Image 1 (cartoon, each protein chain N blue to C red):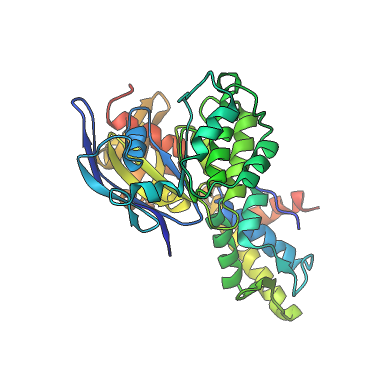
Image 2 (tube, helix red, strand yellow; image 1 turned 135 degrees about the vertical axis):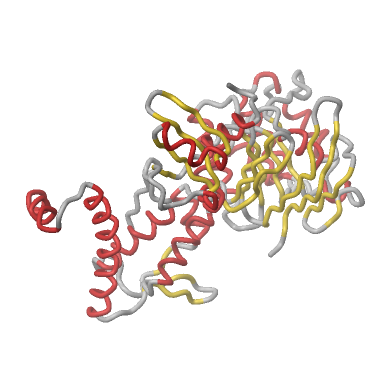
Length: 285
Length: 122
């Protein structure tokens, strides 16, 4: 089993926020969804991986190579897209491409023109004239043309309408079909991941809560509900809960749940897992 | 091969795929020797994750419905009509067990369930 990405014990401290001991691994040829609420540390982690911010400690390996020691070489294999970052907005696509390709040894002009055609990108358009979806596709075109094998995408689907999102997810799945390309993509739109992601890494308050195969991850939690009278039986084992006039609903780890209890239990969605964790932190009331 | 996935179902997606393909095989719609699409291709077409399809295929293999030929793919297994009936009954029994638990939760007796079942069966 080859690891596309191997992150070990990342630490980065800011005055008001920190990521602590962030570790996870992505197998080659798969899609990993990186989820967490806004401000949980997704972007900080991604920027740390790409050495866009200086980490306090920790190590990043891409296809077995240490990022800190071989950054220039490793970056030839990485493609990235940031949903909300605009670069050279007044330049034409053609100009940005001409600059970008100088940095890559394995730039393939043929792949590039294929991508332009396939994504319906017009080289004479200015970056500012592209829709959000088109910007992501342009980043992907650049990544694929330089032969990137690991795509790191920060919120690529945010700000897209359902049709463009669907289109993009379809593309992600096409990209990994031959098992060569791996994708790490962060999002807070968890329904995007329920279908296509193989693995889920969940970050909350700067720490990794879990990183696992998606079904395993979802099966490791139960959403339980019952009358308020039953709440006391499980209260201290719940990650968090909500009470209303019909009773309570709460999230519990499957290992902490007694299946013989009278409580209703169902498999939570990724969104529900995220919400109940956020509630625990008292971020949202 | 027709497989329909519901995202609103409580059943895990790999389970849905497994059940539907088993049914197709047991009803004879997929004949022995039929080659299932490669895992990654199937994942793309069904719009599910690679691991989900992998799990479904593994489950089919465990039940003996398909077998893998390394480097060539997964094929619907050869079995006698007797074996086929046995596997079919196992699947039906599994479903019945789940349903029975539901009826029992209402305190229905077997006779009552049979009476009700008759009403919807034809």
